[in-house]
Length: 316
Ligand SMILES: [Zn+2]
Image (cartoon, rainbow, N blue to C red):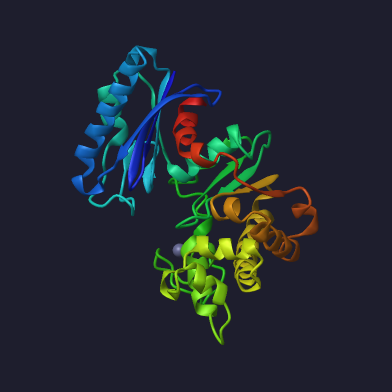
């Protein structure tokens, strides 16, 4: 049995599962980020113990513990630095705390994007490939790279930060401080911003209607909903976002020659409305020989992604 722990900015979960991706039981609770790392981790350890007890299991039944958490973090030392979604965390020895709470059990810590990449590779849309890139397309664009059958971490765990490749040198400011990053052009907030900025001469009326008449409240979900209804304005917004994304993916394809690229969240919700413009841009900006072997698909794990991301770490 594997214990998976997912530490998120708003909610966290403890999960019991097997190496084949079967989830046996799970418990979730609000992270209450403002209570600080010590309190959060103490609650999570207590939650994990309760979960084991509920299933009539003891820590001796665990073959490993996988912990998925926002980075930056150091997988060699098991220390988490300052995740943007967890204020007041600074050099927290997460792995050591779990090793202390569950003596004798192997504990693996990994950043959540890499962990989700591993989960999609083993259980989801990346199954059967040797080289795969995974990109989230949510609030931000995180990523993970599986190269030649294993997770590629880089020199200090910063490989796969594909959302912060520069696409436009004078582009919009990114949360990371740079300009024109892929994340600033193709994440959920970027879709909303682009839609808002494109409203003019009465264009985008249907979108504003869906957003309750308030342009400032437009979200990526509104844009996708209207595009699915057939609204041309919103389809154009997705097509523009898809072009930026496609340029980013073409860069990846030129460098890594992957077999598959798996895209999360927005690509899952929008489907071909986003995937088609992405594939079109990839066709324009990547060599034919490299792109012809690379399929670009939506992620498959959906709601189970976070749980399986934690489980997969101890399943390897
Ligand atoms: Zn950036």
